Image (tube, rainbow, N blue to C red; front, top):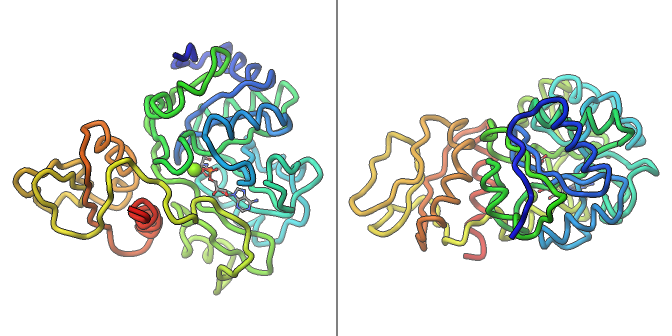
Length: 323
Ligand code: TXA
Ligand code: MG
């Protein structure tokens, strides 16, 4: 059993304590607008090793470094193309991760041995306050993957983090509660190491928004040998229940679909979002609920169209893979 505590009132003292906890080499799970992250001091090899242990994640998968202000990005990266400056200016703090050539600060235990590093400034008051407090204590950045076991659904509440990871945390670690994540799917990952930006993982910052911000007409396309994104493995973002896409649900199954769809008799409705934003926000909670209710199978009717629906379909394809 874990003694790790929930910190729900963020006085300056509480934030200070959490930042200090990180600096001492412990783990702090914290809320962001996308999903909850499991944080460690990005310069501390032992602390980062504990992230991999807690997640059960292969150690060659790189981690995103979180900072509270774009101004500190330069410490971590070399070679920032002009389009990336536009993206950072327009979308940070926000649901976007940029991949750059790394500086010597980003060591192999962060980058999985690659010569690139991912940076993000999250848009959540608790995350930003924690990262700033960490910075004020002399910290340089917080490495954080989503706070779930490897391959599982990302957590969008503190309770989901606790359900996933509390048995792998110790009494010095902390889970900070910042309420449900507003976006609900992981950040857009954009490779900024080539002439044109390339989307490695779709998210709330869409292709259209990237083109608009950078003035570029075409984005780069994914090529073989591109940097590894673990979410691009076949089965990922998956609950224990089997996920089926775009079928008519039958009695005994769970069902996630837009609110206009009726729930057939005997089917357990897990979410009825009114639009794509709501779909993204509710999706992971709904998939978790399927497991809590002991459902074996869930049918999801995918949202159509562009925008964040692209990210939702990306995650659902992976959740359904390897069923
Ligand atoms: O919204 C998010 O991005 C959340 C919150 C906590 O910030 N974090 C997150 O981290 O989703 P994670 O580790 O679960 O997913 C990050 C993905 C991984 O698939 C990883 O392989 C990829 O980003 N990644 C990280 N650094 C990379 C790099 N240098 N090159 C290519 N991919 C990278
Ligand atoms: Mg993840």
